Amino acid sequence: MSTASLSSARGLFLAFEGGDGAGKSTQLRLLHQALARGGAPVVITREPGGTDIGEKLRSLVLEHGHGQIDERTEALMYAAARAAHVNQFILPHLRSGTHVVTDRFVDSSLAYQGIGRGLGIEQVAAVNRFATDGLAPDLTILLDISAADGRARRVTAGGGVEDADRLEAEPDDFHERIRQGFLALAGTAPERYLVLDATTGAEQLHRQILNRVQAML
Image (cartoon, rainbow, N blue to C red; front, top):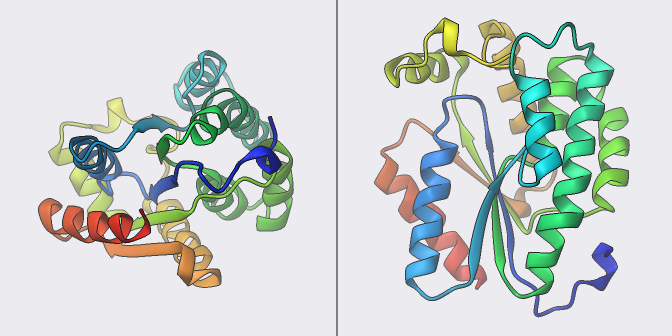
């Protein structure tokens, strides 16, 4: 199934992006609950993941103990998981009229591997255009947070150094590059992004997000 097969009656495709500790999971859950209460058909998912193969690749690419993973291999593993996610989960739901809300999508690869790992935006974008057949979110909600604040939140939530995955364990300067990468991406297509200060209260953030999404429905 290609993106060309999607009709005007398809569901909305919404993506949450941001650095580790930004609160994406919380806001995704709140949005899902609000849309479901309103009777909208909606599913939530995550990347890497969303399919059996995607979850296996998630384990390989994020968990420690699988040996060295170089930058190109990392980028290709994310793209492979995303290809399965799009074709096996996202597109079928969108085509059926169901809204799909995902925790991360292509922008995470552009920020983490393209900028953070230094592979280059265009190289990573090209791989992901092939993986997704050009599918892009109707709205990307970027929760902006500094590297220091994100780390402090993870620690407060009980995520110590020993619990950090391969990317979370990277130093603050890496995460600050990621943050600036996300903001730069949002600046290229401001009409497709909702950029919010992640340090704002959870309920206030939820209202801002829900208002924007409801205006699209």
